[in-house]
Length: 301
Image 1: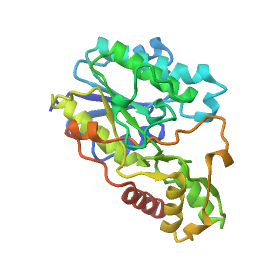
Image 2 (image 1 turned 90 degrees about the horizontal axis):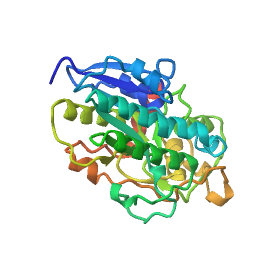
Image 3 (image 1 turned 45 degrees about the vertical axis):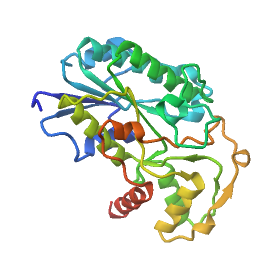
Image 4 (image 1 turned 180 degrees about the vertical axis):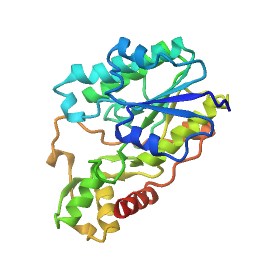
């Protein structure tokens, strides 16, 4: 492994970017540079070119930047596409020109809402498939832009990412607060996915980065990286309540129709890890074990 390899983490101030920078799994010999929105505006090709002016062949760019406000994207599609599609393309073109590697993080939302009730493989997404939300459509456009500009790039789709430790505001920290407040929330029980712990995903992305730096071939361009197992939001909420010593039966299951949101959520978006394993990567552990560690970190922090 070259000691001269630099890994650029784009979106360094976000949930996944923060986990990447804090991870102990950074490959030995790699120098990490975190770039947040104050360092680079990925919607501007000129800004990307300035921020990555030192990018060299063999370096790695991990794009963890995204417009992730799923509901606001419905009324601000230009903003969502500027970051998720145009921004992704700008990074891909810069990486391709430098002959650098690129790992682009995407989402389960690229799938249409009517999915088969079995873990989804990357090739389940047909080229003409239409996501049910602006967010999903913009991320799908970003995937296409990345592979068009940099055919050797890798896309890693993930889902239901949580950290569980304040000041991050995510589903797990929200449920932890509600449990402490004595609340009895209504939580959707007819959407099923793969809860994913940001530090576990970060460790997996660093393992993948190590493969690239070490010259190991990764044949599939699209991988799915999530913690093992599946759950509904209600399952996850009840697991949080139980872990912090609250009665999980205080969490009341409800339907999506009873909890309407501006953007439609996928009813089923469990992602298969077959492509991840085929790349020789370590499978991410079960989400329940990850949740236990997340809540332990929250208590100790």
